[in-house]
Amino acid sequence: MHCEQVHIDLAPGALGGLNASDEAAVADHLRECVPCRTEYAGFVAVVRRLATVMPHEIEPDGRPVSDPVPDPAGAIEAVRRERTGR
Ligand SMILES: [Zn+2]
Image 1 (cartoon, rainbow, N blue to C red):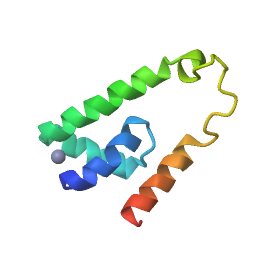
Image 2: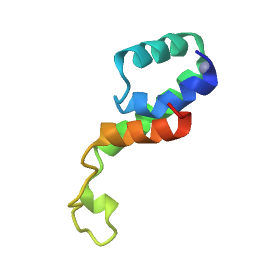
Image 3: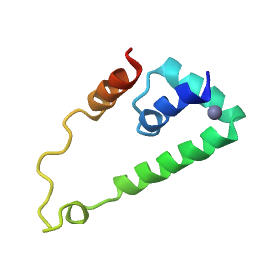
């Protein structure tokens, strides 16, 4: 797997949105490639931060977010298909 292909999968990978074979391919690449590993660590840090964000931090007026993305995995897959044409 080349770095360009891996980059497409890094964000979905950090969000847990890859299928098992893509996840394994990304993991194999990250073991060998320091730049991609560094980028992946950045995505993971963002995901961890987002997991702790409170609704009042998102909405400037303090309103809770009433309509979160209903299907995060589906949304990720849609973006991926759009970018890769797969
Ligand atoms: Zn790489």
